[in-house]
Image 1 (tube, helix red, strand yellow):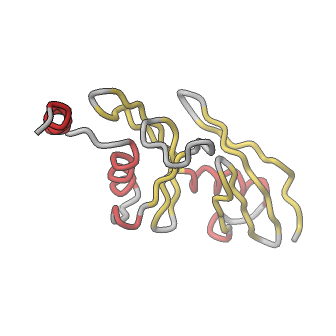
Image 2 (cartoon, one colour):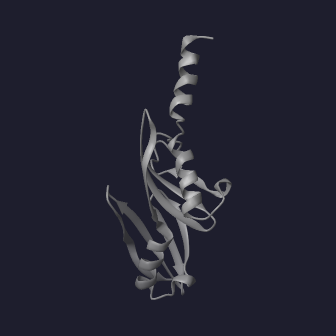
Image 3 (cartoon, helix red, strand yellow):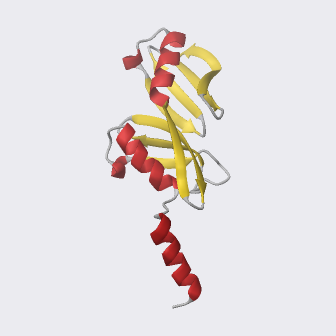
Length: 145
């Protein structure tokens, strides 16, 4: 066996390194009480949609959506932080649209954009996050359908 192959096997065996997507899928499955096989994880980086090296990701499954961030280095991915996107959007949209949270249908449109329909109204929200927290910004005032 070549030295490079042996070093690769050794590195994986020592650190048990898994990429960001795998780590986030397992964390999301736990947070969302959803089987890991039903959780889809995507990077928020549209230039690198298959990014597996850390950053921001969305996990979707079992009618739930969470946004996660993680940092990865030679020791693996760590410091995974997540927020419940559905709860945030329901809270904001229900107030803006004067509609009960259970009457809202939320769709992850792309990147950090979410569409909401309910009570004969519709709205679009943009998720804005920094290192410590996330908040929603309405792209447009709720409009009647």
